[in-house]
Image 1 (cartoon, rainbow, N blue to C red):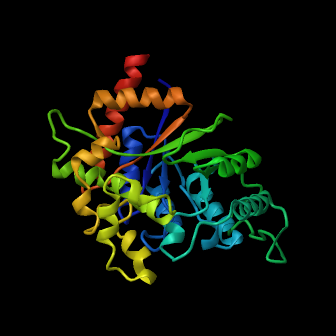
Image 2: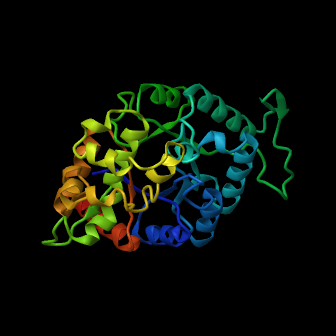
Length: 331
């Protein structure tokens, strides 16, 4: 098995320490979510992680362009490159899920995302680019940023053909959640939520719900916010009823409470061990080994595993231990 094992984090204050643990365990890369209504600043946490580590790759997964001027992002990338080194840094960009919905906004158009990335890439090359009708360029001296060009790799957070086409045009990899890989091939990272069960452990154990319930809850959030017919989902009607008393103008704040961190109070009655298991969110070590082989056969080149719950180091260790056994089994 050659699939790469990376990790992803719903960025927390302790995330730099968790990334240090991930490096020790053998994860090759760590991605940090960018959603400022929920999480601490992604760039600060990535730079803190760079100071605590020496080899693990680092990057935002994924940035939301509307949150920052392209120059702000270019300067942030330069700062992380100075802290971690060019080879360790990769940048993920997307149209926005919680990063937009928690601000009461819809995801961005792909044309905007593509143009934004092109401008940031131009700035990092040392070119003069245009944004909002003005010429801009990185005029940082050596004491303020690494010399240009600054060369980093990119991935695009896509769930459909438009985003995958943007990735192709940009020569970027793909960061995919809940969708099949692109037939175009290339670097494709599958974002995954779940927990490895202890021997004989029931899916209804509270530890399992704490560690993997976030992955089940996010399906309700995604279907509801994107108008995908949540009422047709198992438990969809009950989920809608749980939020029926929330005023429309603040409903997005209630829906995304604890998004990918845990299970909020309104979601909690629906998030059972059986539901998590039916969604592939808890499994034995042996079943995980089968899943890794299936993902690799489907065309994914890497897994971005996002742990949750009160013991994230345990989740990181259990997942990669099973993954390494899979590699030993197939070598």
